[in-house]
Amino acid sequence: MRFGTLALAVLAAFGCSDTSGPSSVAHHLDALYSQACARASYPASGNGLSAGYDTASVYWQRCQLLSILVAAPASGAEPSSIRVTTAAGTSTWRALAIYEYDTLNTGLPSSTTNAIIAYSDANVTNAVVLLVTSGGNASYIIASDTITENGVWMSGAASRSSLGGQCRDVSGLSNPLGDTLTGYPPIEYGGSLCHLATFQVSVSTTFPATPGLDPSLESFTIDPQSINGISVIPAEFYFDKRR
Image (cartoon, rainbow, N blue to C red):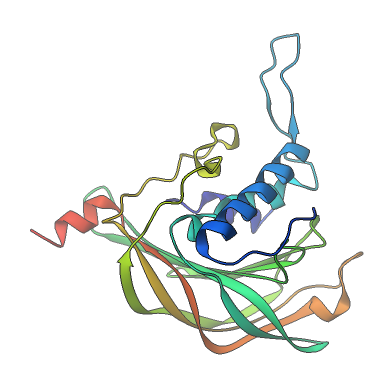
């Protein structure tokens, strides 16, 4: 797995019934992913232009976000119900975490990324992405499906608190991380390299006042609590540790 998609988003809804269980959640998020990406895509033209994505579309960032978010339940992780605090007070959101331990070609440690994705409801109407990396922290919000804004400030920490069993791939998905139209490589991990995990998370971030963004979402805090997710370690590091 690579987080080029998330890094790009840091920059730069449709009615389905609520569901429970990793498989049901994965299929639901996969449907949202397909809908968002369809809105951000353009078809092949008669003059030889192949189909692709309109990166200027307001749905492009949502398309990318959902392609990452679906990876955790698609691997068997159950979304956590978490407490979040905004300017409007405390409310309950859902959240998933993805940890990646990346390496150099030599197999030596290169970087670590904890991506915490908190979302307001089953249809991911509002989502806050918090990146806690070995190189620094960053955040962004996608509100009302189409309003994207980078965080102004972020502090906090995220660490893996326990490691569970091997990931269990959910079948029947559209395999968003394998979609070559995005320009990113497909998701690549075997069950032995991906494990279910829990993470201890405590973060706070702020967003600038933006047209269309609910002012209550300009501040966002997750007090210390546990969040489910997956831990992914590249094959070269996995085998090196077992020599």
